[in-house]
Amino acid sequence: MAELIRLPKMSDTMEEGVIVKWNVKVGDTLKSGAILADVETDKATMELENFVKGTILQLIAKEGEAVPVDSVIAVIGQPGEDFSALLNSSTKATSNDAKPVESAKQDATPVASKAVETVEPVVSKSDDERVKASPLAKKLAKDKGVNINDISGSGEFGRIVKRDIENFTPTAKTQAAANTGWVESYDEVSVSQMRKTIAGRLAESKFTAPHFYLTMEINMDNAVTAREKMNEISDVKISMNDIVVKASAMALQKHPAVNSSWLGTKIRFNHHIHIGVAMAIEDGLLVPVVRFADKKNLTTISSEVKEYSVKAKSKKLQPTDWQGNTFTISNLGMFGIEEFTAIINPPDACILAVGGVKDTVGIVKGEIKPVKTMKVTLSCDHRVVDGVVGSKFLNTLKELLEEPIKLLV
Image: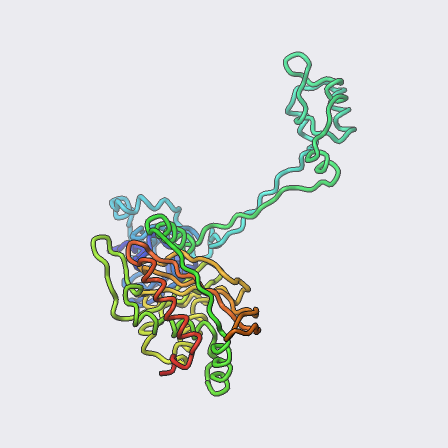
């Protein structure tokens, strides 16, 4: 008997998915465990496994089109079986108005299809056919390189006559187009599932959580020196961001109110410390989680973050990799950004925005000396964290980064 294959919910926040590629075609005989398709969710591209034995009778969802969760995407059954009644009786199948796909290759639409629309030049040979104008006026307009559609007619019923052409002064824009032949153009790319989710979650965070921001400048001289010495003996290259992750985790131990979440009628104070590390990829932003970061040494943290980075870029992160964060760090220092504010990553109460380490001049023990500094900004949900609480956390973080030997104890 034929069975309808529906798109499952492949992540906790997934509302729809995109069939990036069908790995089967109509007529294929499948066993349980076969990979039907590669599906782009809001977090990653994942393999859709089949749990039904039989033959592919129809592929309903097209490659490249967004499909709501629980929509019918394919039909599996016995060869030649009539499944029209089954499809018609499915109330949810009607919400998926994608036309059937005969094969995995046919009518495929790229996920990020690039549509380019070019606006015709202001001067067009056929423009004068769509306006009321005397033959002489049309000839004069053509000789002058003037778009006759830009001219208001003074003749009967708005007809354009000779004097209208003679009295017309082209605007700078019209003249430039006439002289150069330049055209306006643009690209349109379909919004990915990841970008849709980022937009929705961050908009909800920004407009529901009352943000406030605390910025502090930290002397990084000792941290830079310590990192250089660590990398002389470490098998894994430790980054400045790894040091910030470890220092933040230790600071959260002393300030559990920052390691918390707003739950509407309750506030959750987490005893475990799971730090989300924001990573930019081509389609948007992913936040894999370093679990129990306060319990791990710098080498372990560095190895995990590097592994996450590789998986994120290849869209191989799994739901367990990005779930469970209690605090988030976003670092743009490697891009030359000195200071910025970040939007809180739900369900966290805070996010730390980290700028780059820069050379500057400061006063050290009463003397003017060159120093390396770094600015950090803590975005706080005022429903959970007050200004004093956030300030104390930053002071502890500053203390740890300025005396990095404490990170090793």
